[in-house]
Amino acid sequence: MRLDRFLSNRPALNRLDARLHLAQGHVRVNGSPVLDGRYEVRLFDRVELLDELLQAGKPARYFMLHKPVGYVSATQHPDHPTVIDLLDEQDKADLHLSGRLDLNTSGLMLITNDGLWSRRLTLPSNKLPKVYYVETADPIQPEYITTFAAGLYFEFEDLTTMPAQLDILGERHARLTLVEGRYHQVKRMFGHFRNQVMHLHRESIGPIMLDPALAPGEYRALTEAEIACGLPN
Image (cartoon, rainbow, N blue to C red):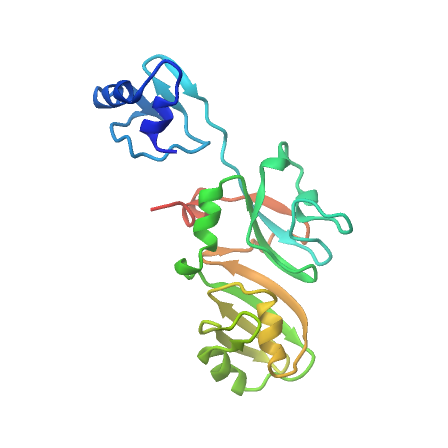
């Protein structure tokens, strides 16, 4: 919500009062005076008017998790354990997933209570690369490289996938880099060649890489540098 609207919603203030307080430097956000009423107030901001605390602000939380196979990318599920079940944290109901992985896919998951940060990471227009390690049932042929780079037509969505980079590591092993996340996209891309994906593991999202020290099911808080990758400009 805009700061001027946030202020004018207070019972004792109207829009004129809000503008005057802003102009006179009476409003502080996270300890610093803010004069611009267009400032977007978030749940994590501490907002003060003179000596009155208007909003204490919630702590923003950011985690990376090494998702194991067999866990659902959801906050709750009637039939399977969820990735949220792996977290030993308070107020887990406030957390959500920044992107998802299939039940049988492992690797990097980002979990936060910061919706703006999450949306910035997952917006297709930002084209953040997502890197996957892939193992297949049949040999991966060199023609896959040019086909993936050109894009594949998905009839169900009536669209062509964006160019993807395939690096062949071995006869049945490859690393695939995508800048989008369509439904079962990796499996469908290899399915174009009738080649079944046997193992799929996400290694990174943008510059955030899965910590090799994390075993499947383990997690840690993101560093300040990692958090900065998803903060709004």
